[in-house]
Length: 321
Image 1 (cartoon, one colour):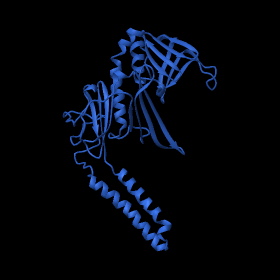
Image 2: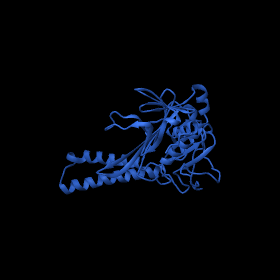
Image 3: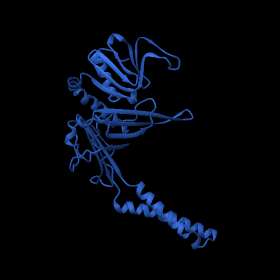
Image 4: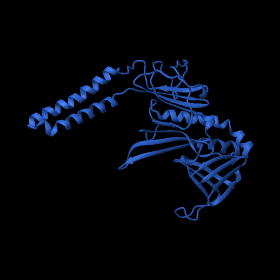
């Protein structure tokens, strides 16, 4: 999983955290007591809703001496194997010695990098999220990413399933928070290998899912301010913008504005990753041509898509199927 935060200063030095007995993981399970939360949650994310660490109490990061010995052993083994091969072939040192030494050095470098210890710790709070990585030692923090929800205006979620020769391989996902101007302020990318069900509880995807749920709950608290200021709640999407107001859904695209009252809507459906709003008396054209009264847009393209469902049902009374 990769996370990026733009221009958001993190909190100062934070030490480990002892969670309460009822602490939950991002997947909603009880947080096992041997999980080591090597960095405490920053206060700016508010009350912690869930936490997770891939470091256990039994984990023993390799010492510097062990790390060096492993690299030297692998690199030296490659060099010795190469020298024995040269002897067997009767090859002089001048023809292959430098090449063998280079391969040995490369093998040592790859081994040293591959065997470095990396620990990951994450939190989801009522007011934000935090993600930390340590390198080689629990007190050596390599990366700290903090998002305060107040800095963002919308969340865009994208999921893409990848297939090869008709066989499922993996799902890639992206969670991107943007400010009112459309600039990304926090991004999380990753992959998992669960096609039809949620990934295993330890999978990093659950951090994203928990973050989306916390964000949506936080954003609900700001709805009234949006309504007081604008008279509607706006949701950016691939075709333009969706506006939801009490008793009204307005769809704005390159063709103009389409205003629908609850009585105008025959159905509002979310199916296979796409929204469809069908007006009463709508006409389905051939291959999408000359279609009238039917509006479709993908879930992935809608900012705050989960919140859109809430607003449509609460402000207009239209049930999303």
